[in-house]
Image (cartoon, rainbow, N blue to C red; front, side):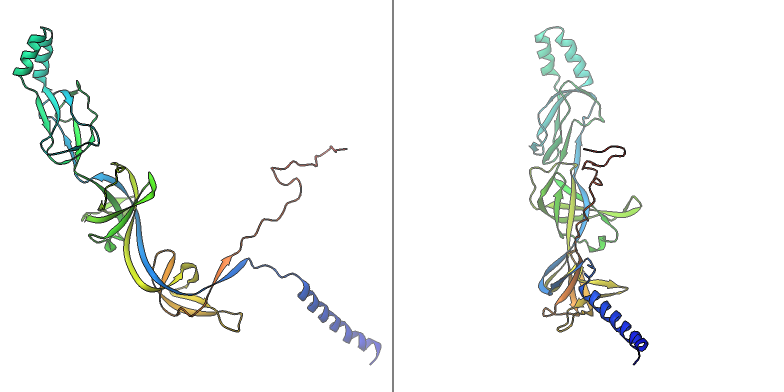
Length: 324
């Protein structure tokens, strides 16, 4: 073999060896993904339908006077419980108020006489309930269209449910109520009434649903905003997987199944049931003995910047100046 032939033979060999060594020692690019292993578990799962609502009186009753006149006294205050037949306020008709004003100028005896002869009108409670508005003051002039006191028989939660979910709401169905003013407190409630007529809110068809709290909290107030979580479908002893373990491809759902003796996972089609936004119910495809791989993104700290590029650090290099 002459020198020229040796050169053409040795050079490719050296290049191949060099490329091999570079690939072995060169740091591999980080894919930014971390594989986590999980096993399907047996447990309970329940779907939740979330919506918003408002605390309202079930029956809001305004107590209005039978005639125009003047309020003489209000005997109740907001939050007070009343019984049917209790006197809520006293009022004078316009004629009595004018007569008493005239008698007052004639002396205390004349005033006392006409107060006894011309009786005031009592405003009575027609129901057992709670006073939710009592802002009218004695001496205030009122008409038959003015509410002196407002009563409520009990407070309820009125939810707005999208038409796509209304079919999953049933009477006596359980729910949890969370008030915006008391986010740390969950209140149990049950569905009491589902309205038959729909409404359109922001181009969305909704149905109103009334719920009654199982125990009426003292801090309930009419007009409070609330989040309602209806308890929908539930399963016991279901096979569960985290939602991030289940992948979607067209109409199929699948998982990445770990294979013993191989670094490449197998794609396994699964049938899923209900979900609670944290777990899927797995109807078929895997067993508790299987190991499922979950790919998650790894957090990477931002690269350090050169001195002076951070806006919170002083730039030591200034154009036209230097430090000595």
